[in-house]
Length: 278
Image (tube, rainbow, N blue to C red; front, top):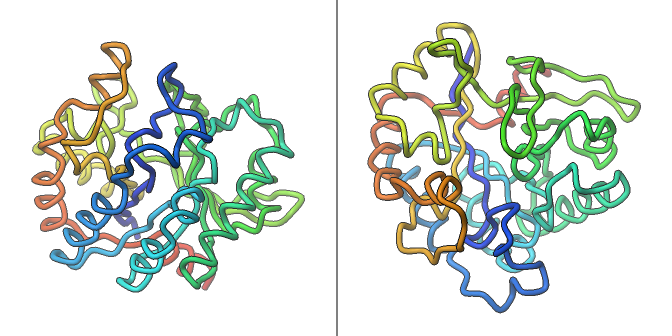
């Protein structure tokens, strides 16, 4: 049975990818961090509506704020991995990538006190340029991945990839893939359920597309970042298009989430995986 999954990529306001102004890893500790209060805002909002989610923690965030991981787990949410250093997959070789996601998994497990099953790469940046990606994720000990954008996008995408959850066979074992939920409208595959897309599209259209995808028997994967419920967070300099996608409509995020949480039932990726394995 198709389900809605609410997921959060837990990273800070300065973790926007692929910009000249994006700070280097060594600079992160010296910057004002807003990830803890913004994540608390999301946790409180989900508590108010009885929603349980999957939080893909950046390993750097888990290392710096382990109490945030513990709190999310204590509130009944799933702690998963977003890698450590927030780097695009296609800029790394296999060994560098594997070391990064292993480090993140270990840090998040130590912080949360529970096994980390899932991984999502920064920017959905798995492409045909990294044919080793799924095997490396399995080798690092993950049971599932949610990195595939089954179409074209700025940071990658895998056009032609399966649009439904699929079990992939790798040399290091089976890996369940939960792709991002694209929906076709006016002859184009678009995303309506998170990030700048959720902020840009009207709530009525988002609701309609949720119902359509569910009716097709496909899961609806929502994703957001904590900064998207923090309209006052600092801004990075960037071009007009990226600025629009990153900052437009931040004040609409929370009201839309309240409406969606009130109308639809949500689950965690680990729960779907558990049902598949039965």
